[in-house]
Image (cartoon, rainbow, N blue to C red; front, top):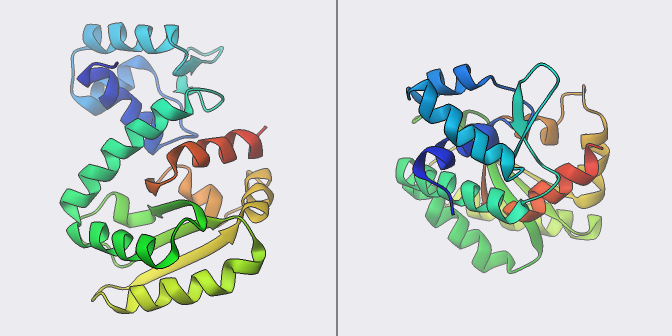
Length: 198
């Protein structure tokens, strides 16, 4: 499917959805030779995983290939679980308690980039506003089982679209765009972003 280098490139873009990079900047970030990055980027552009703007800056294509982007997110999730093993157990507890009443679960903020974050920011996206309080209570009970400081948010899909429509406003959804790791529902997350940021 993808080479290791192509996956590393896609990880940069999925970690920073709204950011744009030059090929040279990607080579610097990944500490890889420019020719290797150039060749890999060329392939990703041909496959329409990345798009290039008029200034030749690259960004992730959120309009298609949601399954492939979700795969890259799953690799990032596994790396997160290696750094923060309790998150794997936490999410397992959450999934057992809630079942399939949610579309997306992710961590965002400092948890994504640091080994010892001040708190663990969690976002859960559910279908209906009617279930928000119930899911929040379940999530709070699970958070209390762990010796960590959690900041959990539960929002319905309609709020996702409202927040994404306000691109310049600081809100939970906009905050997740450039500092997140999806625990579950990668394809749904990219669909929400595609539909909400038209």
